[in-house]
Length: 378
Image (tube, rainbow, N blue to C red; front, side, top):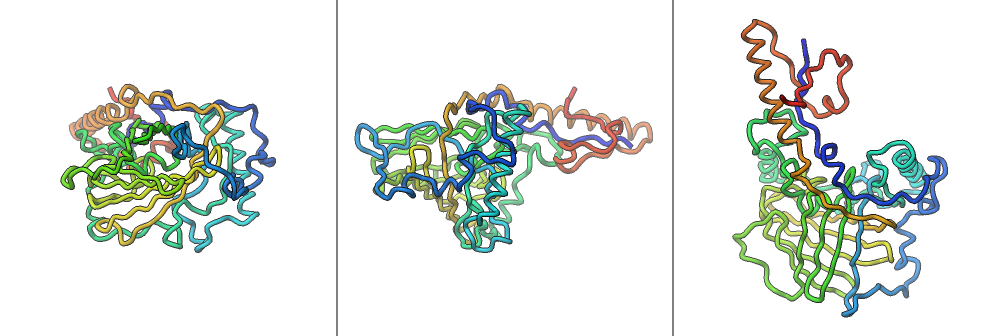
């Protein structure tokens, strides 16, 4: 019996040519010889940690400067949720760190010297965090409430799911190039982790490379917009607390999620994000965000990331719609599958099986001669 593969190519494949990248700085060290930047947990090398008298760079009008092109590439090996074996421990021990550093450097060596897909999209530092979530103490995102579970039931997995694909409503906001949400835009993913920050005396603008959302954050003390207005990225208001930019964002829609690429845990309209951006090094911004959604989550939680700069990294135009074949391929592939089913029924033959997990499309099946590739469409 033939096996029909159900899903389209993912965005990370069809949109690769539009992603930003860092210029490779020579050949990477071999996997058993971590680079100098990986010899010590990067967070311990921040200027503000090493020198209590270190001064934050400032703009010409006197505010702390966050300006520049940044990314979260250096955090790709830090899990969102802490593995249970670490308990409430926030940092790796020396042996655990060395193991991660070797793996990170091996990945960079592969990306720079062997492969091509992530050649300029691999970090140069290794962090010793056991997880991105730092509160609650177990380092894990809290459970959903009953209302949160009901919201989760309204979501679909889009091109990572089994379908069927009959309309645009069967795809995620990420599939459709609409948004990845605030957290989904900053959490490290396979590529396109660039962030550009610009400032003027009255506002800060944060542009995220993939799906190219830009948030304009007023600093002039204005009130949030009316409570009945809901937006994909919410409504942000910022202020300075010493050298830290504090951003409070409300007015979210309940159609977004809080995980990587805008997938994962759903949020309700009650979501409030409190973000804190602190420059701790010429090449590092500490980012701490508290997620408070009393409707969808049983408790608030807090994440910590370090946004870093890499020499030569640039953010390029992310022409999402122009390069996106995911929706087209899935819809046309569904029509091909329907035709195959109709023909099988008419001829008294078994209905072709379909895959139900994206890994079956990505990793293939043991006998490629028994695969009907419907991703290509007609």
